[in-house]
Length: 186
Ligand SMILES: [Zn+2]
Image 1 (cartoon, rainbow, N blue to C red):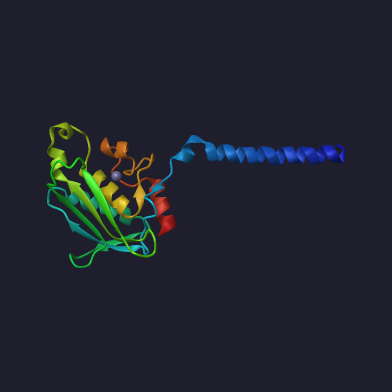
Image 2 (image 1 turned 180 degrees about the vertical axis):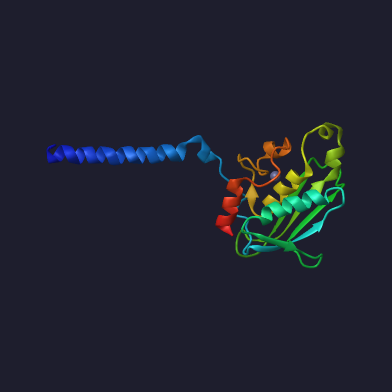
């Protein structure tokens, strides 16, 4: 039997060791790989209408990308030209320097709420000599831009919000962390 003071010290050491173990868990490299939100952008509801104004050039990729986000707690249904929340389109937008672009139009209130969002894909980018040989796909680009439209920013996860993974064609859909984050927010 240990004297009572020694037993108390042993207990304190055990608690300290457990705290250190928790800290080590929080600091392990995997913990960095978490979904990053874009500013505080978010929708105030989870049912969103998506208007697909894509050409036959990329419409299949757009549908697949939207469906992937629809597999989260977000409900993405078809919108109309006069009634939609997210506008998805492709076009020959010229040598803009971007392949895909998401434009959030914030609501006046509450702060960070999204009123509407445009997810656009630039077909000119695909035909430029420097990009022609890149192994990327439209689906990944749409996936990232729609991901921005639901409030996500770039991350290091394995999904399409990871710029490098998306660009080299290995990530066409949201990562499990993206899905988890979306489901936690909406
Ligand atoms: Zn992006």
